[in-house]
Length: 77
Image (cartoon, rainbow, N blue to C red):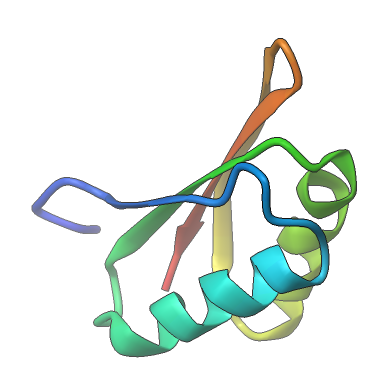
């Protein structure tokens, strides 16, 4: 478990599959146990990113719809 704040990546305005591409690049730069928190406004990305992340071996800690078309996905490397 990470001992520091999650790394936040604001991907509002970025459509799928580019939002996953940005997230994947960032995840590859992180250490095992780090947490990446994505903020999205693309419903397709919210639906597809958790499965794509798990397929790459990452853990999904949360995938929440905040309302107003904003979504948050927390991924642990």
